Image 1 (cartoon, rainbow over the protein chains, first blue to last red):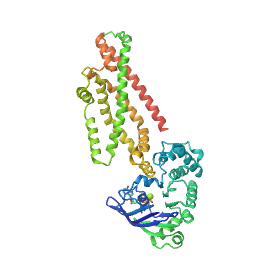
Image 2: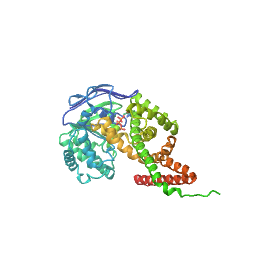
Image 3: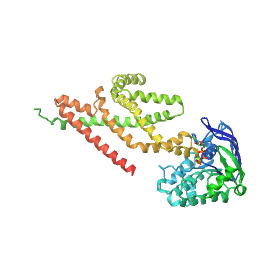
Image 4: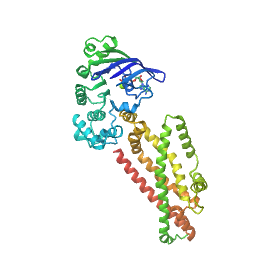
Length: 242
Length: 225
Ligand SMILES: Nc1ncnc2c1ncn2[C@@H]1O[C@H](COP(=O)(O)OP(=O)(O)OP(=O)(O)O)[C@@H](O)[C@H]1O
Ligand SMILES: [Mg+2]
């Protein structure tokens, strides 16, 4: 479904991705982890073309992201993305956050968009908040709305960039629960996160990045049982301490 | 000692009101057109296309370094002739109001564009990114997500600029157009009561503008709350 082949990316003269390659099959859940600045966010932003790449190839559902003829907006509408800081639209009510792109990007009619929005709000347990503005919700609630906003476009896969790292600890689980349910339903997901409990429960594979390189790409059980590289071992022992 | 004599005011009120309507008309048209054109200038200025951004920068610095009165005068001298040629109007058609509106709109756009540029930059990058990630085209993301927030953040400044604009409309006197100030001046001149009429006009501007500023400040506090 997603294939990343020898991707190089630089900001100016600084190379932040140096030859990354991996494959994500339909229905697979991949957790990406690694130290700060290792290029995790950059990698997933390349997957939906939010960041251009200098060389290599990324193919999503048969479509080459970097090809000039690719209609990027159309592709992005099929790839959901959830950000660390939610980035809900503060000037719109929750319900309108969920219907805006359905109407303007997919061209759905208002009633159809609202019906889809309400069914997703049910799914994340926030129907009664439909007419509030995002600022009136807690962080955990906002992130669940953001997930619903992405799902409203019926994406073929979802990208998550540290979806719980801006949340107070007591709100992390309500968001992870939604993501676990999504994974169990068979959604193809790439999740950048340091929540190792989540990774153990649902990830099929772990991708460990360091300094712009994928240094380890292993089935979840293998990764946790015996990381192959020193860097991954150090990282794991540090992160599992707390 | 000079004796103030207010007796010419009551009879002149209908004429003054006609003048006030012209002042308000120019203000409203210049605000609407100025914000519209100013927003386009701001978008050009922030655009990655260098030619567009240079063009907009040039426009803004040009209009910000010429006195308004000269801009207006130039428009009174040039625009009517131009419009007559283009539209084939007769020389009798009074185009002073239209020229004033065009002149103010183009001048104010330079100021509004700076306000809108700051407004666009006040919206976090994550907003545009989230909109793009949902499949919006860049201009759609700008129009549906960034601009509404930019506009709301900048509303107090936009309104303050509108109050200044309202005062500046008095400069149309250079074309002998009877806006509120022009009308007051004409009446005072006719009746030999210039001092009274100018005091009266000044008081009216003061009351309107300070009431409007007060409203803007209250509104601003409510936004902040
Ligand atoms: N817009 C940008 N311009 C220049 N450099 C950038 C930009 N975005 C990221 N970088 C740099 O690229 C490198 C990788 O950044 P990235 O955000 O992908 O790391 P990350 O693994 O997501 O880190 P974190 O865990 O802190 O989120 C970092 O060195 C960062 O400073
Ligand atoms: Mg990151």
